[in-house]
Length: 350
Image 1: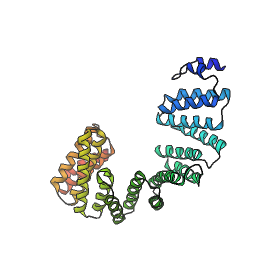
Image 2: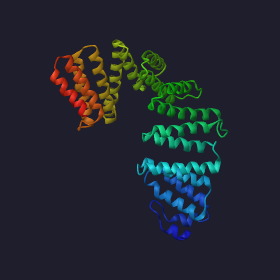
Image 3: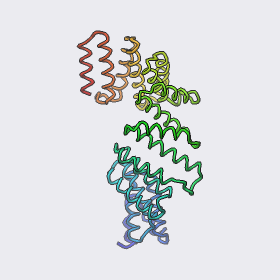
Image 4: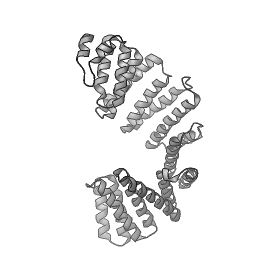
């Protein structure tokens, strides 16, 4: 196909003005123009634009860096459009190959391609496969001279947070804790990274049974931050107190979390906030089971179930199992053994 015929095709999402207006442009320039348009969509609408750019590069030749960008953009578009995850990963491999050919292994853009592949694999549940790519990405940042040290450290912090999360998911708790502590010592630590790392380190402490350490970590964080922005920290602090059977402190935090969720829900009236509100009620069921306040436990059971049913009328979400299990414990504590068995069966069926 000659160039004129190619532009007369008017590929979906393109218009024929490209041929008349840009005939003098280089293939690389045209390909980047198409990639820019594709990046605006970042979904299935991007694919015809990127296919056109890749065809252009096949016909006229493009720099390795241009081809790398097209492959990277196609990987992202396929992933976000949920069209073909395996093909998305294959295009990421191609992007890495061409970025390394163009710039070498130590450039930021090459490192970022490794990070993208690791993050995609992690999001697909292939955490053990994705972790080496995140580690390679951090390694390839090195002492990169393209950026200032503070910006480079900020990127390293961001990528290390992802690594810490993956280490936790893989059950490598001591390594996750070590990674988290290194993040918190970084002078370029920024608010989102601090919140996520404190939350993650606290979860690791709880998983390891080190509830006092979790309480100390969360309490220090909340002492210098606004609790109405850090809902999950408040909740997890309450749960850590509950694990220590310090029910008075647990109630204070878990009720505070419930009130914060109620405020968010009353303002937005969205399912996004209905589910955490249900979860807050579910946490309070556990609290009042421990304190043997059966009427309060029953109230929070009804609210937790009602809210969750408003989100999912089928009753199939895993969270239903948790709620039914707690109701089974409540019925057992009240001596209602047949009812307890019925709710336990419901939990098992979910």
